[in-house]
Amino acid sequence: MWQEIGLELVKGIGKLFINPLFYVTICFAVLLGYVRVKRERRSFRTRILWGWTEAKRMFTDSWMYALILSILSTGIGLTLTTDWVVTFSLISAIIVVLFMYQIGSPIISAALAIGALWIGFKMNYSFSILSFNWVGDSKWIELSLPVSMIVGAAVIIEGLLIRKTGAESASPILEKSSRGLTSASYLSKRLWMLPVLSIVPGSVIPDFMPYWPQFTFGSETFAFVLFPVVIAFQQKARRTLPVNLYPKLGKAVITVGVATIGLSLIAYWLPIAAAISLALSALARIGVWIYFTVKERQGNYAVSPQDSGVMIAGVLPESPADKMGLVIGECIRKVNGRTVTNERELYEAIQINAAHCRLEVLDHQGEVRLRQHVIYRHDHHRLGLLVVR
Image 1 (cartoon, rainbow, N blue to C red):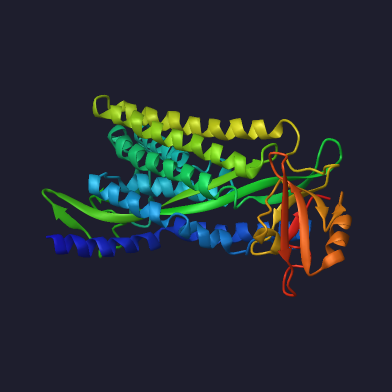
Image 2 (image 1 turned 45 degrees about the horizontal axis):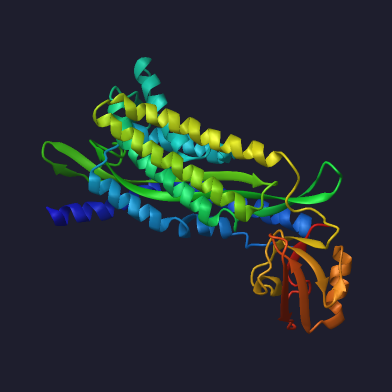
């Protein structure tokens, strides 16, 4: 029996590749990178990260989390339904295609999917696609428990990804401040995919594909299904430096995920609690986005021109500036002993000693740091610095 289950498990992984959401997400991750590179070249005449970074890191950042979530989901025996998986995937695809990444958390898509099944059941609504029949689910309350458990864990993963990678994937955008100064805000816009393995009772994949694996457990027929849980994320940092904003945002999202799982456990005694948990958590996630968005729109830009020196808006990877440990939001006061106040003076001072560069930098705490680096012929002629002008 275990050999049979293992074989069906391996075959079930292939179901990921018949889900259109899988391909839609990959295409739009590539598109995100293309748009970002064009914006960076327009503002700074160079790109910061490779254009395929978003598509590559969509999997590399999250595959370990997806593996752990799949093991927990199948190990605990959390069972979903075909109708919910299809509805969830459809809603996620719409969010991805319409670039509605502010509300791209899986908790929002999951809550909307449960709501759609409830409405379909109440209105006795159904439709067919090829040989697959979608109908409302009369057991939507019972379904809410495994959904809230899986999606709650996915929201925790979302928070961990934001906290870990949000700042490093933030792309600078030059904007005019209220005082007419060219300042920098930072947009982190990402897609992550969690291929989650779960159990679905009955004929999981549409009947027109009868060869998909199923195994019998007792009197019930089950099948494995590997479906994509897509995390779409977008948040702009303006008032706060990215390195400070995104860890706080990630912590808030993790709290929402933990609360989702905690509230859903009450469903063992009060079944409706899981559905309530999904609704409240979806509203809480939207509230987190609104709170940080409004907060960042208030006050001055964290990265704007300063009288004390040249403000760093970005650093190219593997450049001399990166090797010197320079980071966004620091202010360069002196280069090779010469005081600099703008971009032109900065690069003129670099040419004083083109082979060895010495910088005096004010860090985020206002303390002076001295950095130096030997400049080689193949190094970036501007040290890899992007500054506000």
